[in-house]
Image (cartoon, rainbow, N blue to C red; front, side, top):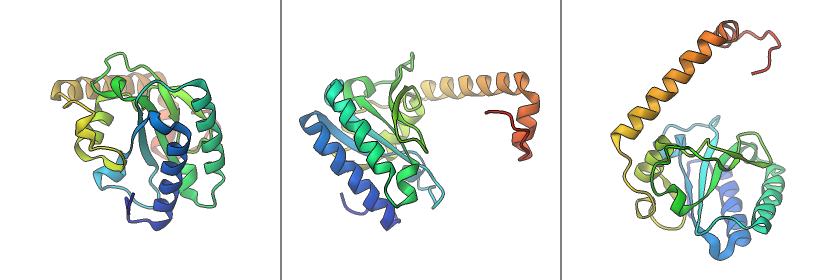
Length: 189
């Protein structure tokens, strides 16, 4: 795998992730990548660690259970990086092109020890980052597995995100004001 980041402790955690995924998925493993802020060169010691695992086929139930156990064990690692892994497990054919439906994939949220279905990584933006800037931890160059992302898909997704944010700010003005100014009213997010 080499030195994927400038943080030796994170590289050790990523090595454990790749080794664990390789052992549990065997021939079903296609590739493992870093994306997000590390791929964009904007990460620091406080960043979450965005990863993506592409599989050759949909995960079997025993593979999913093995990954759940692996992530629970990895979460207990002494390194804080292990608690800040965030990523998805996706069949490579489902990730090749932008999915306008944004179907959920098996996802590990930052700070979580269990995988849950979520559409977090199923976006044009994640595909673009991964294809154009992704860091290979295992497997081929992401350009071999991901089609080019159209500018129209990125624009549409950005506009959808802005619209959702605007709706949220209008529906929750007190919560938005508190977040903007760092205040806490004991409201759940």
